[in-house]
Length: 307
Image (tube, rainbow, N blue to C red; front, top):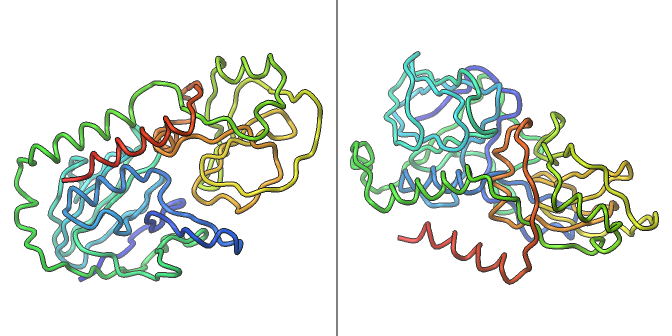
């Protein structure tokens, strides 16, 4: 029972929640850049919420199913087609042996996720299936370890009220246009007063050079009160760094373990999926929150997935 990569995409991979606890050894965290969509795909298939999933970027891979599987696609809408017939997102879909799944064009969002009912059988290292440079390869095959639970109910056209509500909440969160929230970092007060105002009230866009390591931003050029080269220190996903050019970069899932650029702040975890799904031409703004607020928002969104 397996899935074959019929055509290789640009930078598709298998991801999970990431590899935590090893950054002090220089080992990157990795993981899904939109963990909410990945969790949603697994939840809709009644999988464990942390099961590995296919993370799909555009141009996307195409998949041939060598055996019957049930899949669910969430996140970005790349117009998935099964045997040249479009299929819906956020819905369990039966795939039969010989079926071919393709993605035609990026209509909305930046990253899609495909979960499979069961567990994708792939290489695991240090408690994670995520790797920095491990991309899906043409003709590569992945077997699926089935779980014992009956999956016949997945293919009913009617979702439970819980799943309908969860899908709506995740989609609404990812698509809202509120500011991206940040916690001020150690270099925040080194900014000139005018640059602070520009950061909080200016409009930014994601550069075309964005990748899983970081999202360079286009927007106002920012200046520090005096030019000092900070000591290298630990960074994490969502760290907002000020480059020597005065431009910003947001570190994403494949970020380095330490950084030497000025650390202006930290994008809160629940807003990183929103940023991860923004197209490069979509403007956004920033706003400030404190650590306590960030914790409360995170706990509230985690509650969505509890049933």
